[in-house]
Amino acid sequence: MAISYIDTASIDTASQLFNRPVFTKNWPFVMAALLSIAFWNAPAHAQLKDSKISGTYMVKYNGLQLGKLHFNSTIKGRTYKMDSSTRLAVPLLSSLFNSLNWRGITRVTGSIRNAQPRPSNYHFAFRSGKKSGTVDMQFSGRNITHVSRIPNKPLSTAYVPVAKAHLRGAMDPMSALMLISRKGRSHRSACARTIPIYDGKQRFNLKLSYKRSVRVNRHQSGGYSGPVIICRVKYQPISGYKAHKKDIKFMIKNRNIEMWLMPLPKSRNYAPYRFILPLPIGTADAYLIRFNIRTGRGRQIALVR
Image (cartoon, rainbow, N blue to C red):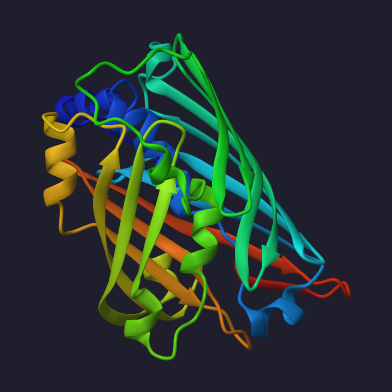
């Protein structure tokens, strides 16, 4: 995309996205999590058994293309494996300033019990300039039993402490998206759910509620034509955060975060199609540009290409 000028305010804010706790480690991280695909409920299980699902999302900030998120999901019997890779960079300046590059990979394995995802292992690694880190988590049943972070700096007393009770029933960001993909009896019920997430440092909920329904065409959407359900997303921090931080206060008050859900044909499921995240200056936006399902029988379905 040709750019004839540099919006310094946008570049400054984009730089902050890659170098501040909420809008770097968490912003691309949560963006990747929210845009990871999985399709599970009891009726759909038989249809997607032994399937491979892949897709790509375009990530933009104030209209500037920052990069892409690629994901793959393999469903075999009652087990699942998911991985994603993300590379974001500020246009024009990323080749000069390494700090304006962000890369992340995520891997998770788990199983399905009573039509619910049960993660077993989770790994996340990121690099932004000279900063890098990893998060590893193990699960038992519906609980997180072990967390390892590198670097493992102890949280100061300014953070709301993470209690053991907060880790009961919490999920890693990728597995949590399986709860979003289930189709409800109506559009409103499809959005009516609260997703409990722990990313290795912060425990928070994403509360979804129905906002509206629209139709999009290929010209508007980049490849998909059809109906979408728009859910309002409310961020609810539980622990592992600093309550006095302006970023946190902004996110708590933010009423314009949206998750767009695309209904899958001949299925009782949705796919996250678009995610809109308003920021203090500008808006981050990610939308699906490629989506394929290869079934166990060798059939390939391309909903977006």
